[in-house]
Length: 121
Image (cartoon, rainbow, N blue to C red):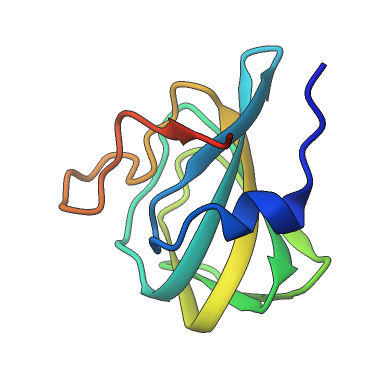
């Protein structure tokens, strides 16, 4: 069994928009990411995605819905097929929970796409 201390895990990397794998359970991945600025508009056709803010503030923009602003300790679940774009005016630290095979940029291929995630040590 592996205990994960979020403070230490986030301290182990500096890159923004480059999720790290913190654990897996029942086909789901627990990912940690530092984010700042705007991400790409995308959607996940076959997967819901949970965003939990552990520090800072994250805005999730939606094409056809009102934006959702998340503060530390808050989360939102983005249903599959909903186009969205995460935005952080200042650095935020987030935990993502989604199926293990879910690509961070969903249906879009950009320089921000990560297919092989580094694991938290």
